[in-house]
Length: 283
Image (cartoon, rainbow, N blue to C red):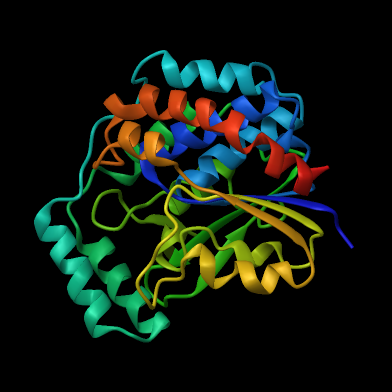
């Protein structure tokens, strides 16, 4: 049976920062999650996953301390975005009217495809600038996305024949905020349209650590709690989500790069508190 899986959930720009803070803080405590046999990334977690897997593969400038320092250094190529009240209302109505998961995903997909966003090429450029390499890492990385037209859930890895930049951009394509990404004959959006973590992909692994910036969900979306009981039947599992201080640092707009440094620092601080439980599962 494969041994260790690291699951990295969605949570926007601040979720990226918090996760990297936690990972770097854990590394400083002697808990190296980059040694995972499988890294699963959803939305923001796909970007972190690509960075973590690249670090494990020895890519230059990708140590956890380097990645953490980059979160403290400034805004970089990210620009502020937000989910306005109109978009949130459309999300709520779609949830209310679509209790069937596939129907929900197709409706959200139509919303995403019809939205006025930055051009896809511009978004791909942003993602490329955030990745340490455009090549898939040697470490097993799975990136999640949803087909905007069919609602089909999809994972991409180095054997999929899809570029890493396209896969991560698709997984990070928050519907109505960022453009759907064309891959082959399909158009793909955020893997979080199915679940914020898609932690069930770690089934079969013996030791599982889940970083979940967002834990709750309204059906047909699947929160992390939908998967953990089943995973625990056969594996050691620990879930880490933002504590009170981290939630305050992250703030209300998870797409605000101005909150990036505080979120990263809060993740680092939280790592000291969770290092014991994480070490017990991981080692």
